[in-house]
Length: 550
Image (cartoon, rainbow, N blue to C red; front, side):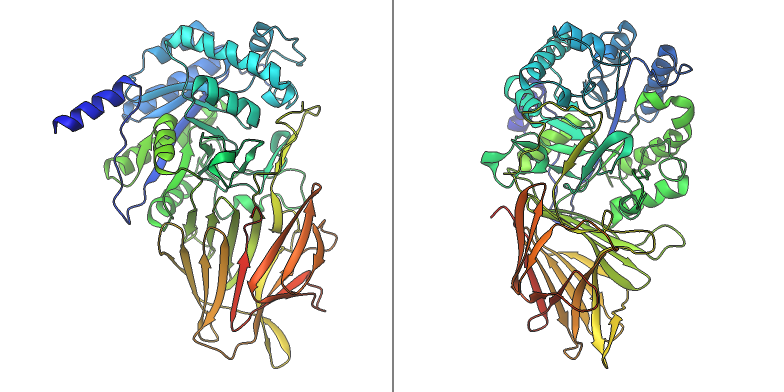
């Protein structure tokens, strides 16, 4: 007992908060409430500085009403504003974390001795308002100004630094010099506000490559040791398919301003039910909260739905409500490299029969969607720590920003309305090609790496999918007579990366980087039915090696 008190005292002295360990089979469901703060909003003259400030006051009040833990992240212009300083310094330190929001406004750039190129004192374009718009040496100057001014106000350096995207050089510098412990970037999206992050570690958190902040690293030696949490609480069923054939996606997230999602009581109740009750591997994570630019009037309804619900789940022990710093320290203490994780949905919103599984490891991500009794593998992307992003060393020259990984199946970019891309499970029955149908899938975690999915087929038997860090196995059990296979179907005209298809391997090239997927069991071929490729089982099993970095 004395030793425990000493340890807790030491943790308090160095600014850490002890997080309880989790018994086997009780994977933590971690929630961060993160609100980030801008001083001004040049896009709408009715959104004044006072409107933005009062929005944060309202956020603070409702969080304190329900005794909620949370993180507030300050853009530099808000950091230097006396009202925000007084408000945030008044918050209890055992419940609230103050950190940095890494959008770069005019006062910060000029304080670093650089010329401001923006249209307004805060400009959201990628080549002006983000670290990608500056040279590595300039990024370090900007970081030094922010961190020293933050310390002069709060007495310590921020431990969490987040943004829609932060380049790898900046992240590494903030870790090396200031020892940040957590970061966050935007959920996967295509084209929204000019920012594309596509194919990455879906939701949850990962250690990024030293040369690519969006790419999960495969080895400890090649990673930045700062966990990057994915923001905004994506709908695991619907967000992915939003806006097919459009230049930008729609948004279906936990953000309280969206009336069909985070502002809808039925959707929020569904989201937290599936988040807390459905199986997840190692842990599950989501982020609530909202930027003040949307204003309190737009977000009030969603906040008033979500905050008491989150408080109730915390009180019942069904979630761990933490600051980003706490979650970052927990992640680093438990995982030396990016762990495998999963997010599953066994029951969708009312009126829908869809179910889904997202599986991530440091080598790949994969998503399966069940709909109308059929199965579609709608996404597979590979990760490789050796692929640099252009922003680590180069300066962004466009008002847009893009991050990608390596596509094997892309059910968004390779689709058109009514022609959804993906790997489909088919069979040849009396000379006719049919889509296999089945019942409800069952998800089960076998260990810290392995997820087993069993899908009972209408024709008898079951299809079993086994996900591991480097491999996926698909096996037919209980009915040896079905002549089954997987076909990759895409919309006509889709831009595909494949350069060759042989019996044991498919090769691809994306953004000048070559990669491959090999079959440890089963074989690839080019069918005559218009599919891009076919995967034929060997002794009723297909096993894919998805460790492109090996």
